[in-house]
Image (cartoon, rainbow, N blue to C red; front, side, top):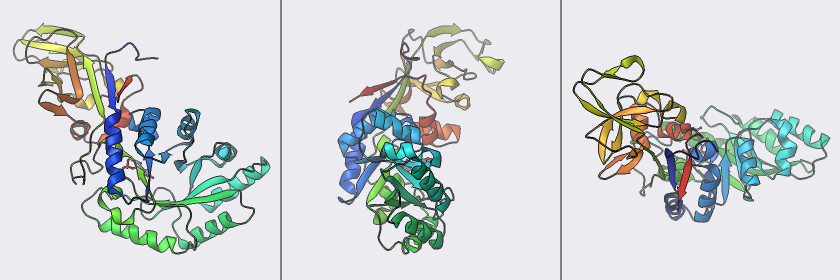
Length: 373
Ligand SMILES: Cc1ncc(COP(=O)(O)O)c(CNc2conc2O)c1O
């Protein structure tokens, strides 16, 4: 495995993941199920290990983005319900039905096309469908009561090859203090589901933010993602009703240490020149690992001290100014706590002008994941 012989590593604290889920299980309505959102390789944490920890902490289902992620969970032995949140090509309907996977569906055309393919393949096992309603996210889903009613009629037909298993929507602003747009979407949701005379087994509207700050409308299942990784969906805007424990840390070990004479430069473009004699350490991580070039000028932790990243971040290595001479092999903390100081994914996201979701998901497969429980 590429990365197996490498000290640079992501460490995932599975106990933190279980604690985050346990806290959510305790605060939500007891009849509401929690399905762990483990798409994008578990937001970079490792889909299989996160799914296992989530299941142990009370998750009763999983959400993924694409069919292959669902197939990977099945291949790993998970028998729980798995919902694919993106739109899956109808040609894969027979495989989906065979593997007992649930799909988000947003159009009548999809149902018509998939029904024909299922019939042509003599598939007899029902295909589980969750109707997606677009209440304002503007991504996928039925938009009018009329088209929704038609789809429900199709699903309910006696010879339908589908199992009408769920109906859901997704909020675009649940992580914001201003709930104007959230309320607009909630009203659209109520208007749309009014045409569904008999609701399916699963009625779900909540991502982490909705479950944390808009619990009133949970439905009977929460699609719990970023908060199970211990990350605040709002970034720094809103405080969570219970402490979130970040599960991910990123560490490395210095591979090279040198005395850099005043006036000497560091890295591509020679953009950094030492103002006085300095100790410089080389860290074996770079933008190919998902540690972005934009992080030039940010810092890492060595010996509990912040050390500035000097010069351009390279593909596989970066250089930092050390507070004093440090031995080769010394630990470098890029995400996590060292002594009295911490660097969070949020700190990195802020410096890069993005969100922690993107940083976590962007940590490359070349960085080995190590699990502690
Ligand atoms: C439909 C749907 N439900 C639930 C979740 C979980 O959200 P959470 O991680 O905030 O709890 C997501 C995450 N989707 C995305 C998260 O970032 N970009 C996305 O498209 C989603 O797309």
